[in-house]
Length: 154
Length: 154
DNA sequence: TATTGTTATACTCTATAACTATA
DNA sequence: TATAGTTATAGAGTATAACAATA
Image (cartoon, rainbow over all chains, first blue to last red):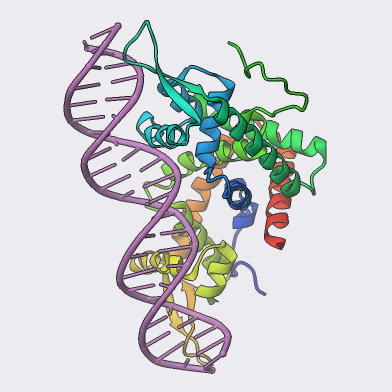
């Protein structure tokens, strides 16, 4: 299996497989496919689970703040919140001071659904990361955060 | 800023930010946005760049083999190959033994375009990974490959 | 003027299914 | 029967632009 054609390369041309971005995407897709399968029974897409998580974690968060935290547009969040509200997982509550905003508050049902889903997600991650030690997982997360921080600063 | 509501949690409920999958996605999106901006002038989307890379690396590869390597469906590859062929970056060559297959061979123009794009991509990665040491980058790639391997084995 | 939530819209990515021509 | 390439199609996911209500 001949690799790169015989071009006179003095500088090293990295193989696709050596690029961080390529490996990042492949690992992301791999994990994401299993994540979807994990929460398919609960009918929770990754984004919907993420939104519910943050609403449980930060009750009364506004949609704008939530969209900012998730790194998506406000407009894109509407359908997600609609979906969670339709299931009775959260409510849009009006805020006394400012009549523009809608505070998102989790219901008891929503909190329970989230807790159950979180258990399934933890199992999913344990399964998918079985080949990594605890230290490796910790360092992986630290490195991923560094990449994100660098990109978001600009 | 009150974190999780006061539910009687004995087990640790991990925050969204502690999930590997969530951090993986955010880092992926961050890197990918800059990648797109980097190759926008060359009009090369990530997938098109990846496909061109592999055709340069493995001349005469078939579309089916290329799709398998990239982890996408054969049907999805058609538009990518069409796009590269339209620019004159590669040619679909018929193979003597089997008249069903189309061997993908890079042109000289395609090889040069790829080399130039690869330089830009290397600069992009150097910029985005400036906060990571060489060892950290190496380990990051190793960990990402472990995740991918685990997922693809099943 | 600026911000919140919203709608309308369009574009990219990707998968599934079915077709054809070959094997 | 099975495989390579292709077409048609549909469904996510996401962004942009504009709007009404409110600040």
